[in-house]
Image (tube, rainbow, N blue to C red; front, top):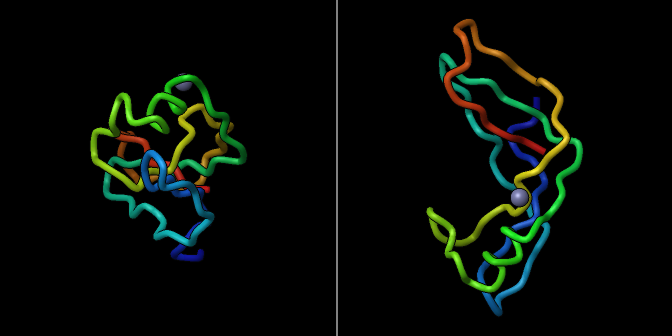
Length: 86
Ligand SMILES: [Zn+2]
């Protein structure tokens, strides 16, 4: 499995977008890695694009939190957190 994925990165208000290769999330025991086939943008994303609200962990961000998932890799334990990949 490739260690990187393509993603749209948003660098902040007035700074624009780019399509880039980013590291895939690494799973730990209890994690579920979910492959996202497509993701939509909603009004929450557009607020972040304008800087209000600011993203919790700063810029750059990968926008789109309403995705169409398919299970990808599951660890042995019951998933405690979910990670997304494209
Ligand atoms: Zn939303």
